[in-house]
Length: 130
Length: 143
Image (tube, rainbow over the protein chains, first blue to last red):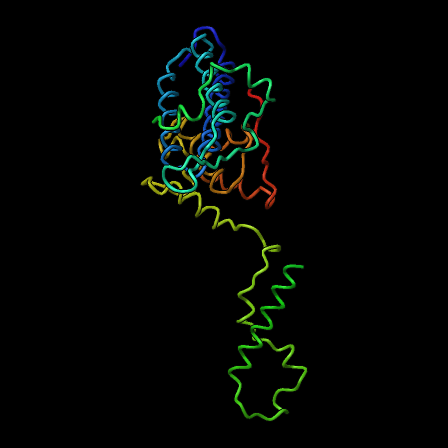
């Protein structure tokens, strides 16, 4: 959307940043949902829908920059905090093989204790449907 | 090392198979000792192919693979412009370029990815890439 205050060059820069963010987010979905086509497609269509609704925000406005920031935050969570797990040992088994990749966030043990109570364990979210 | 071993075993196999087709009674003058070692039939060894060498992707193949990604569009040609001819918006264009990246297992930097607006530009970009040395480093910081 054309801006009242920004020069065409600034608007172009902002558009470039948004496109770059969109690309970054799509790449993050590709990393987080590798070999999981239904989830990958769902994530991408969600990303697309969100970008589409934010399309009419004014270039350079607060809302627009918040939307971009939000998208980058989502991408960061997808990259660092989403781990795919595959049940091993048949149905009802408590064993999951996790695909922890290069960008998965790994902290020290004492740091993970700080988040205690604010995070859910895997056992709690295992059966949830996204 | 591995390749040598594969080639050697393939040659032994090929020799074994040709030997099976040879008649039981034959004169030694027809196949001297030296030639049985060397003359392995070319067709049986061609199954072993070295991928280390090779001329990379051809222009037709690249164009074909990119066109295949966009095959659902009616008026698609090798010169199609994403926005003007196919009616894609900027988000669609990003998605198409992403699909091309995934097809060729490369990662196109933002600046260059943004400059791709048509099928022919995409083909040119892919053709300009040195084989097998894709830029795999993911962008860590955003602008």
